[in-house]
Structure formats: C-alpha cells, structure tokens
Amino acid sequence: MSRIMKKPTTTALLLACAFTLLMGCRSSSEETGEKTGAQAYSDTASHADPYLEYTYAQRRGRALYVHYCVLCHGPEGRGDGLNADALDSQPRDFTDSTWMAAQQDTVLWEMIHQGGRGGERSILMPSYAWLLTEDEITFIVAYIRLFSE
Image (cartoon, helix red, strand yellow):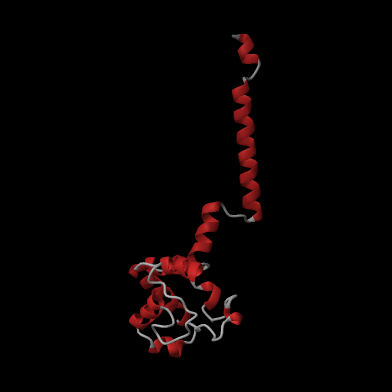
C-alpha cells in the first residue's frame, strides 16, 4: 500500500495533464476573444446567411435552381450565366422587379413546365415537364421571386 501512495498512477497523471491542457486552452481562448463553435455559429447564423431565413419551398427551389437554371440565368438571376453568351436571346433577368411584378406565378410556372415554346419565348429554353414534378416547379418559382425583392 505504501508503494501506491508514493507513486501516482498513470490514470491520475493523465487526468492531471488533461485538466491542465483544458484549462490552458480555455484561458487562452478567453484572452484572445475567440468564440466557441456554438457561439460562432449563432453569431453567423443570425444575420450572415439569408438562406437560413428562406421558407422550405424557397430552399428547395434554390437547390433546384442551382442544378437546372443557373447555367443560363446566372447565380443571382440576372440572365448572365455561363451559357448566356452562346444563346441567340438573352435569358430572362429575374432581378427586373417591374417584369417580375407583372408576371403571375402561374405564368412563370408554365414557362418552366413548357419551356420557351410554351411562353412564346426562346425555343432554347427547355421544357422541364418531363424532369421536374409540379411541386418542384412551384419551388423554383418561389425561389426566383426572391431575386426581385
């Protein structure tokens, strides 16, 4: 028993080292003003990313827009996507609030569903009726409305 009392156990040493390390890290982050992961997330989530404030339909619409529409209409809906220069007519600019306000959701929905031919637009705008569900088209319409707000 005297032998155990004289030599600290390996577990006790490890615990002491871990405690010292944790206390050292804690004090250094407090001194430098660093934030924990939860603090940093709550600070950025509250005001930095408007995506967190979107409705479910707008979030789903954004994902679909990025997948199917961004190449022509651009990431910000200005009609300046990578393929825009190669097209005969410029893709629609969804940031044009005057044009967007004049369009009903059903008209936008039909343009996506039937493509350019359905809305008497460029025939290069493909129909997505065979690829997207009715709800998915509705989600895209909800998202592109955000560009003109």
